[in-house]
Length: 347
Image 1: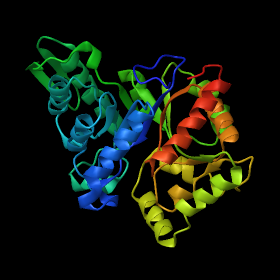
Image 2: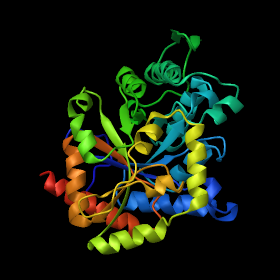
Image 3: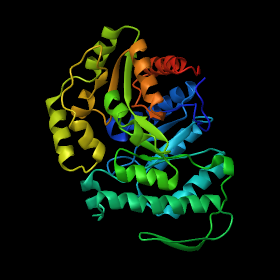
Image 4: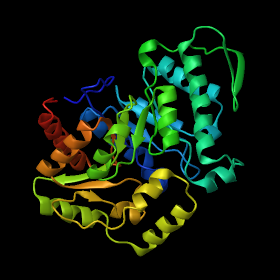
């Protein structure tokens, strides 16, 4: 069984991703969130990522739905500092723990779409946003760890004689993830003890940077997977789900112009890679603006072998794309089991 508690050096942690409110009819959205939450828990996923941006419903309200309709899974809530004070966020974590006895995970984001930030009156540059994110997270940690008064003075935030009530039980302290595709993101992960989540490049690029990856920072990968026993069947489903879309390609090009995310630039520079049994790495879903992560497509055996290579490089957390069905998630979890068997660590 895949581990659903804290992750050790020899274990992997798998998160799914919650449907986005902008992609689902309002009348169906809550039902879809509950369905994906329950599928994720059924397959022992560690949790489920909940996006946050200017065009989506509030992620904390979605997290409440997830908590009320599952028993143990952790909502992984995307946290953008510009949206709320760190005290308010720490209060939400402590309150959910107090009311439901549940643990929340945090996905700290600096924000890559400049137009969203500018609309909120925030012109802060990319690397400085990560410095701000460090301070923000440090205050949250201090509030949740301490039973007394907290003081903090930084460049972006300061608090004085601040106390968190209700207190947070130590076993419900949040797991923290952060974007780690840029040097600033990795430095922030090291500073706050977070897992640095990368949008992984093809395995040969990641392997070439093995020394840079092995810095003591915990690493994760944001990646979609389409897999079947048969290679051709996997690719047939992939092209059916993500057909070429000129309108989507134009939307992707526009998004690139207003984004300063390092991962956007890194993946876009890879260019076209031919589809073949030797190349499982597929960027078409992202390039057609259907999703925001690279995909691995292929047979169980090939994808399991590829995942084993990523795991061998130190990736211990995997955030999957939104599962379109329970059966699709079942295929993905099967290939993770096979990958861990290859690693000599059956799950």
